[in-house]
Image 1 (cartoon, rainbow, N blue to C red):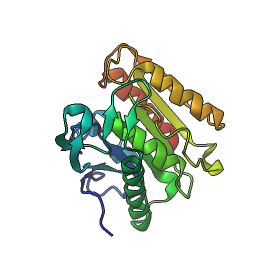
Image 2: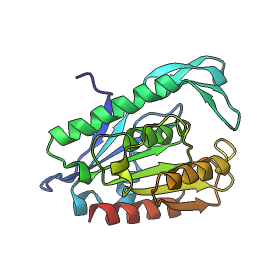
Image 3: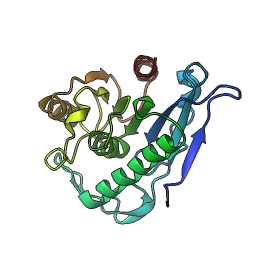
Length: 221
């Protein structure tokens, strides 16, 4: 199997790994982007978590004049509806599901695996989590949107999935209206996400990290 390259942070030495968080970065970043958050969450030892941070491939991105950069999919037009290369997004979602299956092969139960993603990464994990063959422990989406809402083959087994949706109220890159639209789509499918906003732009704040830690404690306790 040809897996996405990843940065992995294991639970401290001597602590058995019995949970995994697979966390996708945003456009132009890489797997190192959210690695520093692990120590701020302060959960790895308590819950035996392996944090997996995949690196997106480098591809030309239309909205950046075709400049080659790490991206989960091409964005062709930065309008409110977001014109994207949907097939690239679906491919990234499939590769994320491959990483889920690898964690299962490593001995982690699906109900102990959480997907997380920021911006582009969040769009991918929406697709990956909601179409995966087995229910997961949780889904965390940060400053993102759900571009495949009209085509996503939602699996009814995920109706009970715990979901945390976080968004900056001053986000100029992914307007909060897109985050709220994703929330409405999830509710349409019968999910009951926890939606939180913060007075920030397209970024992550300390209050949000605190909320993420609380969510992980809830779904992995």
